[in-house]
Length: 114
Length: 109
Image (cartoon, rainbow over all chains, first blue to last red; front, side):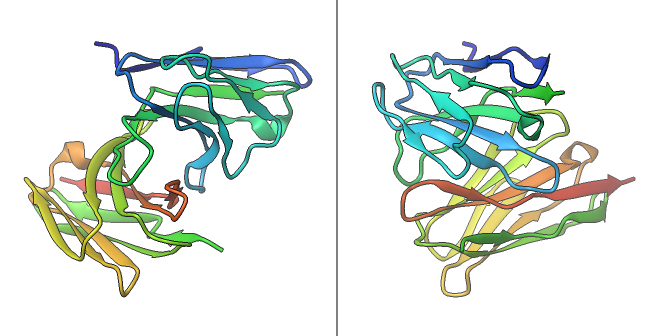
């Protein structure tokens, strides 16, 4: 059982380019999340999805978009990358979206925008 | 605004006990989580508290006081492998996690 996977592991991207970070889970979890983690800051929620077919904005959604066509996949797209989007991106999932729902994290994608 | 505070870094000795504190101010409260994150890896779940009191799980315990907006994570019999960052996160009224910046714990022999 893989749990939750992310691709690519790392990427260097030129500013202005479009990039999609992939996330797949095999736990049949309803809820999925995208976070970014920057040095000295806590994880910040970009977008989330409580169930397939629905998405919502988190704390820092600008410059990012997501889709949730099915239960397993939750890709994150940067339409036109900027250097401030250099970060480590974590995808996570949980069985539900209410309280006491432990989030399981993927291994992360390290993105550098030049 | 919403705020989670925890110390940036702590140092402890192998075999000892360490307490990592977390204070929070959030819009609503639906529980507090502690996660462990080794350098270069993903966070992994340690504990969840929603009621006041102490939850014990092996060498790790977590305490919550909702009236004080305060929690701590207690690690006993420290091992070198416990060197990691410990993240405090509060679930707010929208059921979203608000994360602290993490406490880097350094264990010395």
